[in-house]
Every structure is written in C-alpha cells, then in structure tokens.
Amino acid sequence: MNRNVLYLIIGALVVVTAVFGYQLYQERHKTGIDISIGDRGISIEKK
Image (cartoon, rainbow, N blue to C red; front, side, top):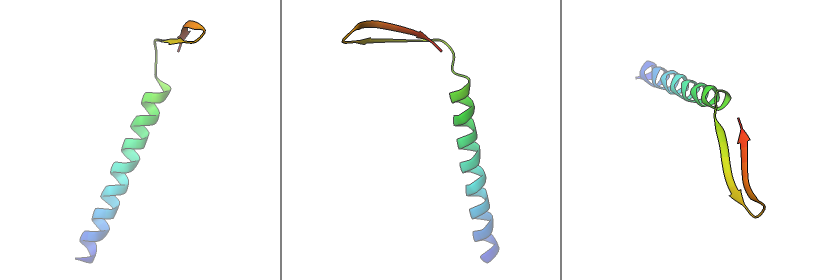
C-alpha cells in the first residue's frame, strides 16, 4: 500500500505540472485583438 500512495502522489504531481505548463503555453501564445468599451470610449489593442 505504501508504493501505491507514492505512485498516486507522483501521478498527481505530473498532472499538476502538465496543467500549469499548458496554461503557460496558452498565455504566451495568445494572438488577436482585445476590444474593450470603457468610460473613455472604445479601446482596441493588438496582442
């Protein structure tokens, strides 16, 4: 049972690392434009 717990912890760490890596990848590769409407009018920014 001790090995099963160790494997579970290692598997969870692998999953967490993969999720954070994917989120970082998505954040760095955002493309397009951002359009926002505020008090000063319409703002368009290229990403």
